[in-house]
Length: 388
Image 1 (spheres, rainbow, N blue to C red):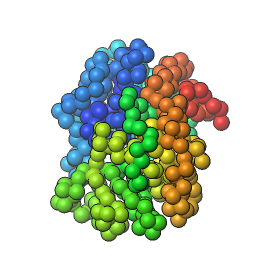
Image 2: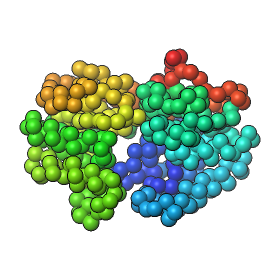
Image 3: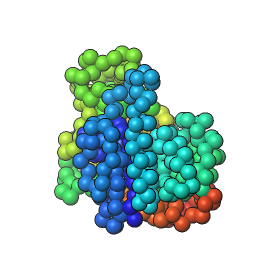
Image 4: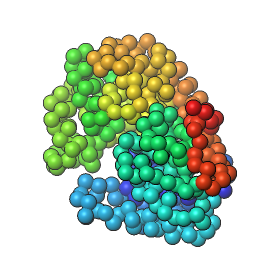
């Protein structure tokens, strides 16, 4: 099977530091290739992931342009998508697996009946783009999958009709993971700093309950304290940082390290007593949740979005619907067994599990007859479809 995986023009695969979708693709592709799938990757020129073929227009990621006015950047996605369409037209692609928000789905639907069957993975909030999702018609050739069961419950009916289920995200499991007994007495919040992630709540709770907190992740396009010094204050993430988070960052009780990657990030997460997820939105996929479990760090968070289906309360983490209770749960996280967290990640969220699940979906969309739509079931990380 030859699959074209469209990663988009924003970041290389794998990314350097931040880049949730690109990290997932970098985790998925090696597993697919081990299963005999030939992968054509549509990304940017400085992607280093080993694949069978690359398609690119831009020499490097265009993420830096995302905050510019629309009329200055509106050609980026069409330029990338045009190259993808030209490659598909060569006629040797068996399945298209797309990860480009909105434009990817629209492009797939516009290709016509002679194009290969396509799977579009939904990585984001499905209450966005209501005009697209509420009227979407994949013409029996384009299907979608979610990254959690909860995510799909928030999709418009028209989009749900094209669903072939969900596949939970995965993370690479370290061949030589840090020892489980090296907890260093702090709590970490990993991810892009914005209102939905709730870093301001985490910082206030750290001061109130007396635990040390480390924030790791970018503020908008700014990946370090030095870069943020010259930031555009009109950027919404920067504004959130300045107004709601920075006043609590004292360099002692609460620290911000910027974006970390590789071994530095893994060491930070593995050394934390808990990974805190003070969510104010319905997190669809939870990449950082999986990373935390794989490194033996229990999760403490708000029970919304994907967290309740990923965390076994009392065994791999502690969840609540009450923001104020999070501080107490952080104190209790030390009673959880890091080994249980790591074992759960290996069982449910390994790259091999995710690759096998996606291969099953590729085979499914190839078998579905034209005009059949999706299914009413959801697919878990093992690849089994559950009717609902």
